[in-house]
Length: 326
Length: 228
Image (cartoon, rainbow over all chains, first blue to last red; front, side, top):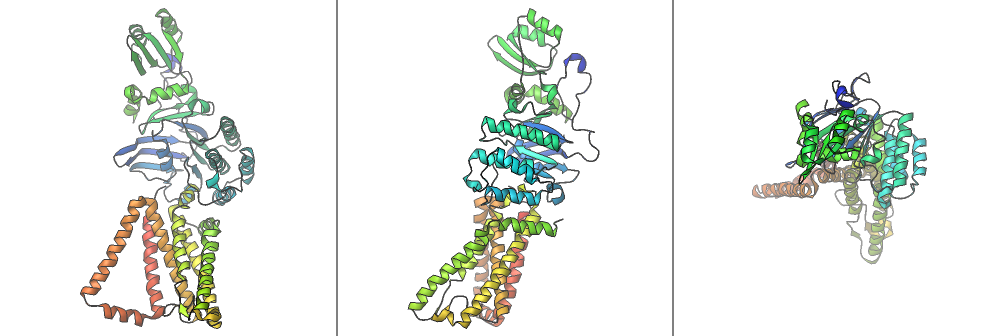
């Protein structure tokens, strides 16, 4: 696996970080992706991605626009076909496999709907998902104030997102994929989505993958974080391990170098003689030394971690563990 | 594997849009009939091409079934194969049903001597001019053919966009041209004419059925790798 995050101090680094995707459920993991590559006319959208999503869990698929999040989800849902590599869902290829496909739901951010009214779309979804809950759909429709009699194409951007969310949650599919489902939703509606996602998940656990770039907003929901950049997985770790796992050390370049010497550096920014460097967790001794050196320490939020993991200019160090493990 | 219940559900999925598949084609056909009745009441008895309304709309229906409705179909966890078979089931239902209504109207037109004004709207010489069951069979095959043809166009558009559609059309025109040239160079026009005359409506229906099967197979191979 590509888990490559320093966990809780130097001493703890001896043991590997817990991998949430292995060995928790008997039988084949829900989603298993191996060496997945997708090329579009000279553009590499996904580059040799190997990753598992197993057991009931909520995984955040983070990355910038164009990083490859949607491509990965489309490939898992068999809406797109791989150039190379393999996707297994419940141990079988999802491509042209009705038995597998009906256990998985993926509503795209830019979903095209037929000439349907809202209630038609919900009705159709109820026919095809074996675990569909009419009650859950009705409750969600009411909470999102979706006009069921309105044509889908006349819905606002936010309402169309809400419709996708209702379908994604009410389907109660064992594998539930959300692709930036909040587009056009205001803060209140987004919070409603997060609340309902958690409630649904608690009552009917399933494998949920949520692609997003509103990182800090969903940080509290996530059990695991997968970051994609330039078509590659650059980070894959339990969300708890990421919180407070990275610290930005800034100050005079020479002093910074003294402190971080011998450590893995995750990001580096230099302006004149001042430098800011991202490193793994610092223990008490490190912090005292930092104070002596007059360095500023700042614990990074998940969003800032993503910014560092995705900064391609100096992204080398972040990607290297991925390369050596892959 | 695709179960029968999935096929039925896909057909139902399409029929949510009843206006496209049921109301509109009939509204247009009846409108066309009304116009032709007015014209026929003012002029001597005539044949019209009005029935083409129904057939061309069936082509449009096939086209819409694989363009606008396809992405959401895949989102609902339907495989391409199931989607295609279910949509073909819709084509069969529409062809059988519309064919039956057309046959009834065909018979009624005969009984009323062209709606009292000598109009040949549902009766078309040579093709739709026989007993009711042959009229039904020819309508069935004709509607099915155009729907399946439209489906293939739609899938080509979904898979290769406008460029693909243009290439698809160009390919068909090239094929048609090749056939025409071949017939011309072999001085076979007279023989070709005789072939179709001897073929009769029943034989022609058989030829169309074979063509439909070929279009069905073409659409199927195209949709298998279509992405949304």
